[in-house]
Image 1 (tube, rainbow over the protein chains, first blue to last red):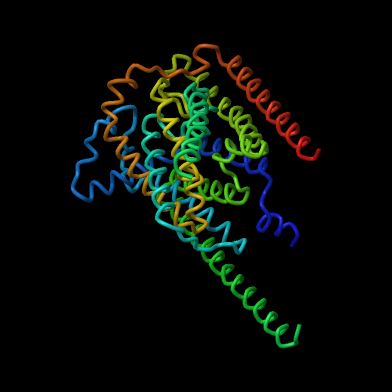
Image 2: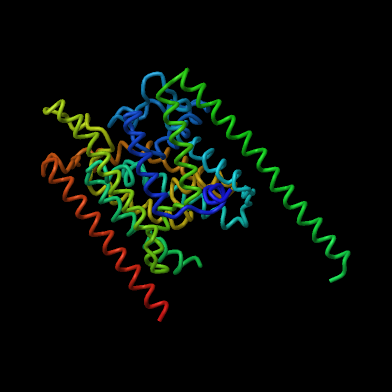
Length: 172
Length: 232
């Protein structure tokens, strides 16, 4: 029962978390020939919505360049990114349920709503330029021995610093 | 305290426990469905089943260890603690070794490798990387979390991160639509810089490990320095 509490109820130490994430990322590369990436999946969902609305988003230049297109037999909704992203959400959900900690947490006010939306848009747009997010262009890129991972790390840090300055000066 | 008050408290406590036990049912149900999907996928599409089960484990690990990439950058500045940053660096050390073995095996079999055939995540690097990363960093602070954090928080029941996700979808779709412009002006001129191609395989591994270990050492020193000042 004590071990159960340790695993299910108490937070794990960061270094254990980090080590498991690393092993999982390596396992993913071995099992699927693909690393952990998140935001391309978000783009595919956006493109799926546009397709439903009647736009030919699949014809965009983006999808014909740099191996950005869908793999054979995949669609904008039915693809490995969708499976992986939903699995991460479900994994987190299961973890909180086992710990009896699940709770709906509402948005406090419209300000928070707009912060969330604008922050999301900025991050999303950024990921198309940098070929990934803090996972694809950082967590999976640095171990791949690609310089862009290190550059991303430095400038993400600079951006976070700039962001907090802007927040403190103009908004808060 | 009157006995009736105590009784009321007792009842309240029992209600709370019962309410908590309710989540256990959902946990059992959710876990069963998760395994059912896994076994279904094994038959239907083996590759997707790996994405599914590893994704589940990534979600559980990030949630349980309160792992947050945004905080790993923020904590050293705001509170002087580097325990998360050290965990990220440790993850890099482990995955660098793992990725190295996988890449090395591929390339030994095929010495005339093309850069696009190397397993892992290799992308062109240049000014666009910096612009994208700065936008990402600003957005991360404004929205209060990164991409992986957003997914985890959605699983925990935060409505706000659903809005972040919608923003993420809008932003990345816009970015993809404008990609022609960025590609013509910046990206198409940028190279992929893959260290082993320039430095050789083992030197790249050793140098990267030395760099990561040094950063770990500095982070550790910084943490200790700050904690001493606090206790004094």
